[in-house]
Length: 300
Image 1 (spheres, rainbow, N blue to C red):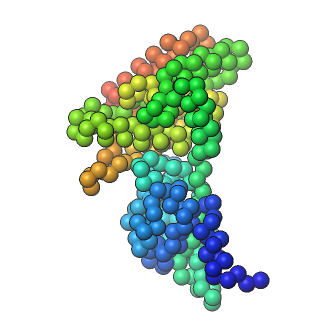
Image 2 (cartoon, rainbow, N blue to C red):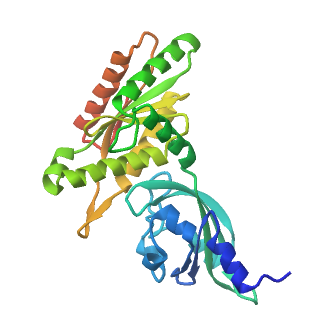
Image 3 (cartoon, rainbow, N blue to C red):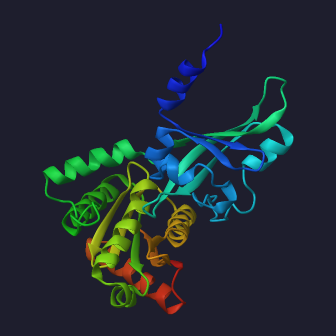
């Protein structure tokens, strides 16, 4: 059965996943509506640009830049092999989004490779996060700026999780997070830009959290993450991944790239902990990260 060109175009236009095509020089020649929705970049902003122009700023889980280095499309175009991988892209608004990508060669009627195809899916558990936002809004427990849980909700959940730990020994960890040099950023760029930076940080938390974890704004530029069913090595690994993703994110204002880093304290709940001792320990560990040069995580 032959599919006519107009039918194929309708299929591509209505895909739920993002899809784009590149030629042999990695110039983007097609960008579907789902790619616009997932990334925030319109087709007009992208078509004609090259992957190595670093529009999407792809990174792996270690924060390594891919668009200007180990681009997944290169081995596909050069060797003709399809493959998939989980990466992170930078949304137009600045925050990081995890995606699952499938890359295949683009061939002509004779089977010669003429470019590459990348199909990508948003794997940020957006539906679960949106449902959580709706629930929090109903309970007036959401921070209006960042759309994360507010301090009241965090304190309530900490008490619930402590009771669960006491009764059933369910482990959980706490990340205490503070934006580095935030006062200087506010003084330099103004409070409106400072608010956008906080929203950008929060967007990275929301897009990269597991459905059963909770991130919230503790106050000012401080955030808390409650991480369920985790041990010390994995808490450290998860925290450092989030820290790297924030570091790799940025806003653009008047052609200037505005980036911020975070310092983190990470700790697991202990027998005998109450909410005050748990948060105090995580807070002290965060300040140790500040003393060690910032943009790092201290586990204790």
